[in-house]
Image (cartoon, rainbow, N blue to C red):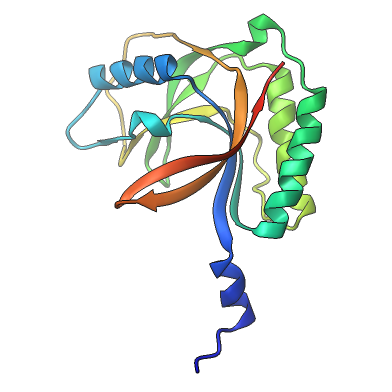
Length: 188
């Protein structure tokens, strides 16, 4: 009989998770159409079903940590109130994360309440001993992979309506990276 070390056992019981603002299908379709206009053969488009605005990347999370994070997110959501204007976002920038070679849509302006939510979720992750990067929160929607540079693009503005955020499980299904919502919170 093979003995599995305790740390390996822990990894078998964990999931790769993140919190994200949900995008509705209409907005995902608009982003997908925009992406098709700027597609280059040497880059890979992220499938539209995976479009989201990350709030906090958590990494590998145990079942116990997951349950604590869900409770904390529920409490945070009870205090989150957004105006109609703050639920309507405008993606108007294109940026690149150089090391992972990921292009993203960014925001010139982003509601402070949503930035606070992201920071609070990240702090809750630290409280359950999950590593969190110390860099400032950068709201974005990843759209392309394997990107080193982009040709100059025309100014754009994509309207995005936010109504909820979710805890997602990042997994592979039939060889495709897929984000499955575990729990969703409606935003008032």
